[in-house]
Amino acid sequence: MRGRAAALVPCLAALLLTSCGAEKPVAKPFEFSAEFSRSLPPDLTEGSPARVAGIQVGTVAAVQRSEGGGVVTVRLESKFGPTPIRADASAKVRARIFLEGAWFIDVDPGTRGAEPLPNGGRVPGTVSRLRPPAVRLPARPERGSR
Image (cartoon, rainbow, N blue to C red; front, top):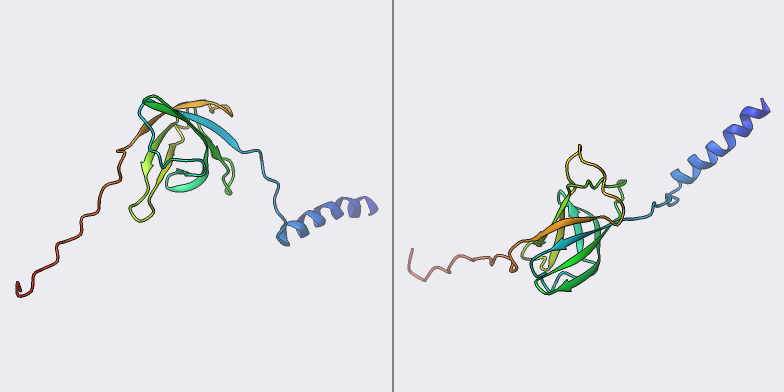
């Protein structure tokens, strides 16, 4: 009987801690680099969001610009568990919606059959148009035109 109670105490303590809002232990963030052969926009900076399927799963940790290209280091810190990045993954610099401004990294995590990308690995990257598309507002109708 005493052995069962001794085994039950740690389980109850863990349940109590998780139900009271204690922080869960966070795994070491996963980092990878994306290499771009086209110049990067100046507004892509450290702290810019990184998204997978439209959900923010991390941020840009570093940007190294070079002549006609650069390397961006992405740090994934998903609250929903680890984001599997595969060896055939890719990254694209995209413009955020007009009212948001700035840029983000759109990560394609690769296909399920591919090998996992090791922490610190490198994937190819592309850059979308360097200027976000301008929003055209309809012309104001002249008085008396209706």
